[in-house]
Length: 161
Length: 361
View: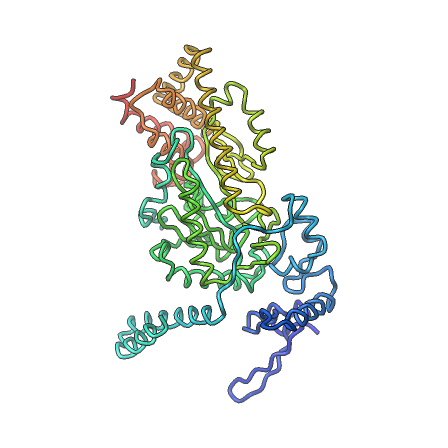
């Protein structure tokens, strides 16, 4: 089945959405699902079993479609050969098999030993996004001279900050 | 309407001020980090909407990042070709981001945030290219600045990172640290003494590489070389910088030695040649870009050798940037044909040298 949103890629996620009392069933590909705020990648494991589950799920994700095509951006090995560019971060796991050899040829090593990085927790990202929206609403409120609303928004921004 | 570069605190050219170490030989130091935002396909494969969302996410995050809170945002996708060329000529955006590269047409969402010596290109080959630019030979300072920006932004925007492969990038040649540190260096002594070939071969053996004035794919003109790390994976940022620091330090010594040899063995020939270069720049009525670059190289060498005094390295740096086609068109306030550009260039160079001419000897 093709994705209801882009109509290009295979649908892998079923999204049930309730809009104005109406239940809608959407079939989405991974990328459109991500755009709709559905996190399809596996969260960081919190207990030992998590590692195992993650491995199984990744395995499933990789084998559920043609193994030579990235599930997220649909880049193929021949795309890479033509452009020398990967299509997304997921390509690095999709094509992990030949990746180490490729990186060793390019860099003489396949192991990152530079700066370690941990992405911000999703609460932080959500807070930043909420702040962004509030600031935008504040700007509009001031522009349209709705000062009571503006004061209220300013307070809410202060709390979040 | 034309772009307003006065919005930038230093016009985006603070790196020209010839203030850093070895500024007569090393024009500038640049460090860039390639980063991608988690959740989107890389730029070339992303849809217009995705690229615009990357831009707004980064914009929002930067509003609370101290170093770039006051940054100016230029939307390349809304600028005229001349304005985009202007930013590129100032080394503030890459050719690809400016959409000046035939292979990479201008993308929606292509933008750059600029502040004092720091910049963030958005929707380049990678979603983000953070860069720090400094005058002279200043790797440590540039790295301190870019590292801080990277940490601050990375705490607000999730970067694509893999425990084994490091920061993930569109091109596998950038993966790992995502860092390219480069030094723009003027090496006429090594070129004239025919030592350059050996030096370049040596660089490659040390895991470094070189490019022309504008980075990847650009030709070497006016004896300007950009020396940078070749690999980005398997060594830490500190190791990569340390290597570049040592090798460039060595190259500077070799250049100084070559200059001494030139003066000793061919003193009057060199002196004559360099004064002729100065004379041409001072009086020519039409100059092509390559001609101007080559003569400017000669004059820069003459200043370095103290054959010519009273002419500042800062003026020479400015000439390098402001005598380029888009800058000349900007100054004239209209598009110029090629021959008009050459006339305008000669006029500009003459005027700049004339202003300092009283003290030149």
